[in-house]
Each structure stands twice: as structure tokens, then as C-alpha cells.
Length: 165
Image 1 (cartoon, one colour):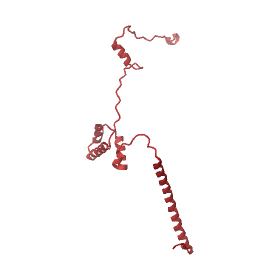
Image 2 (cartoon, helix red, strand yellow):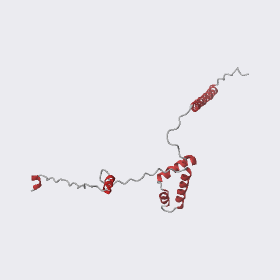
Image 3 (spheres, helix red, strand yellow):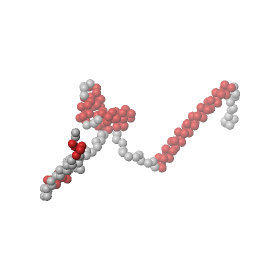
Image 4 (cartoon, helix red, strand yellow):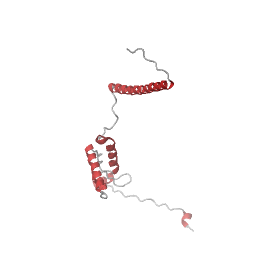
């Protein structure tokens, strides 16, 4: 038999902290330093984001290649710890370097690309039109050669241009 089930739970009030009427400056500072959860809050100043120049990136990539070529176990990992970078960053620098050589490691300006002015818009429009016309000329040349071959196979004489002078 369980007596607790028969009599029901007993309610016990929570203990309340006793507050002093007079607060010392140290206790006020401690109260201000506590967060909502009651633990002390310690804030660290945020570090600015590191940026690497193209020369630094190239130096680190070459140093990483030298570490791999040395064949020592853990040499690359030690170098990454010394430089304070992750292997994923090194990997992305290698792919950038392989794709477009040294110019790829240069930092790009953040944000949108500047809008084109009237001269640049006209230039882009003309380049697009030129490419379209070149495609048409290629197709027309292919059609002319096809017609010449058809005339040869069928034995039909090609019309001559009488306007030539």
C-alpha cells in the first residue's frame, strides 16, 4: 500500500533568497553582470574578419604544397594550425588558382556589379547582334555548299552570274 497516493502530494514552497536592504556597489555590479538565466555573462570583443592578399594566398598554397612534398606526417595540419586557416579554405584557393592562375586569388569587390552606361549597353547589343549575324552567315554558307553538291549529283548546270564585269 502506498500512502502517498491516498493522501495526495504535499506542496512545499520554494525557498526565496533573502535580499539585503542596503546593497553594496559590488553586489549591484554582480547583479548587472548576470543574464536572464542567472549565470554571469562574459562578452568577448568580436575579431574583425581576416582578409588575405593574393600574395599571402599564393605563399600559403606553395607552403602547403611543400609540406605535402616533404612527406612528413602531420606537416600540412601543423602548417594550417600555424596559419589559423581551415583545409577547406586552402582547397578553395587551390581551385581558384588552378582555374584562372594568379589573378583568381585577388579579392573581388563585394556587392552588385555596376550597371552599364549607354555606351557599354550599345557595345553589348552590337556584340550580340554580330554573333547572331555570324551564325546566320555560317548557316548560309553551308546551304550554298549543299546546293552546289546537289547540282553536281543531279548533273544540273549552275546558273552563272551575268552581272559580273
